[in-house]
Structures are given as structure tokens and as C-alpha cells.
Image (cartoon, rainbow, N blue to C red; front, side, top):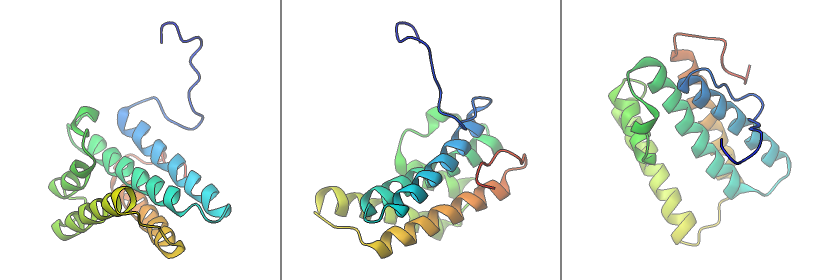
Length: 147
């Protein structure tokens, strides 16, 4: 990076291959979720970070198992569509995930909604489950930081 001094990358984020980068980003985001939850009351942040972890996990799987590139994932909802197209999610699951994402965006950003503790906990469980499932489907192991 020219003109920005010495580059310091985040610990734990793999720089080897794009899929490993996305997977380890998901791991780190899940770690942040745990930190936020231990502080109580950051429900909006927990939910947003969970969506980020879910999307990075899907991207990691797609990049590891197909010829997709990071440039293919410029739209949040594309991740969920792609998860179905490549066999990671059933169609119903992909549609439900897209709907959940859209509802959260609409309510959180434009509807004045106030997330609850229960919603934050449910999203944490969902993000963890999607991440673990994606990790278990990637042929190359030993990359996930969550173990």
C-alpha cells in the first residue's frame, strides 16, 4: 500500500487464498459476536455481525469449491442465492435466509425496529450453525479458527 506506511494485517486472517481469507474473517466475526454478547445489550451490532459471518462463510465455501471469485460477491443477497446454486443450501433455506436479511435491513435501517436479546441469540446460533456447516463441507480442513 503506497503512501500508507507499513501494512499491518489483522491477526488470524489468512492471506493464503481468498476462500481461506473469507473463512477466517467469518471466524473472527463470530469471535466478535461473543465479545459483544458478553457486554450485554448490543443486539443490533450482534445481528449485523452475524449476517457478516454468515456471508463470509458462504463465500468461503463457494470460493473453495467452485470457480467463483470474490468479485462475484458484490451483493449481499447473491450469497444466499449462490449457496443454493452450488448445493450448500436447499432452495427453501436460501429463500428464508434472503428474506431474513431483507426483513432485518428494512426493519433495522428504515423501520425504527429495536432488536431484542432473543433475536440476537437466535442470529448467533444461526451464524454459528451456518459457519460450522460450511466448514464441514469444504474439502480442505485445518483453516477454521473456531475449533
